[in-house]
Image 1: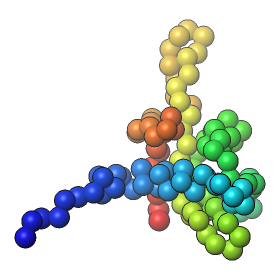
Image 2 (image 1 turned 90 degrees about the horizontal axis):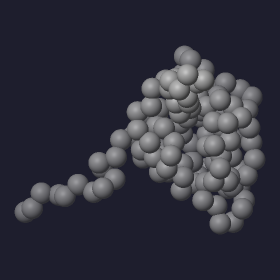
Image 3 (image 1 turned 120 degrees about the vertical axis):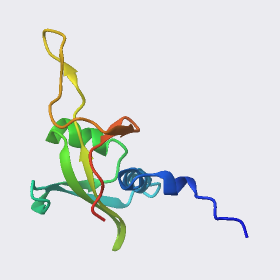
Length: 125
């Protein structure tokens, strides 16, 4: 009996799996998926009320980075009553050069990128 070969998915970290699930959930051919975004407090709790809600769109991570300054978010994506995605993601702003040409980080140091976004931590679920 041969040993089981690990799949590509088993080589992904929890944060990478969460991001893949998140990107898949944002791909909404029906246009009916609603997104609810909550901040996560420094002690790890979801802050209510939600800071943004609307329909799923592929520029949501950029919107959270640019309009809310990145950070830790809990995101719910529903299609009607069905829950499509529930997870915690971190969006970290990337280094920017200041007037002297030196790069400065606005928040934490990036870990790795996926589709141009920084994976900031593992998801809690």
